Length: 120
Image (cartoon, rainbow, N blue to C red; front, side, top):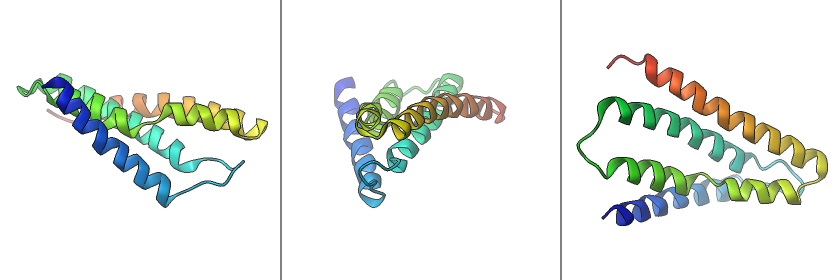
């Protein structure tokens, strides 16, 4: 059952990612804003999710695998980000790598702080 909900969540997350990359394509050599936004927003949502699920301990044992591993795992796409880093011109690739790492870490940190401040 756990694998089924992870798979279902992964499909939903991947479809959301695909839709965003189709709506906001980037040109060869350009900064891939859609993938950057997907990864940073996904990290923000992961930060919120894990604080809130840890706080409320839902009875549904499948919620965390569905949302965290499935939906957000399928939504974020760090493998595509690293491919974009390698295929971009050097300056764009380095800038993209640094801003992706910094943005993802800051997003999780900010979401964690925000989620912890929301009253129970």
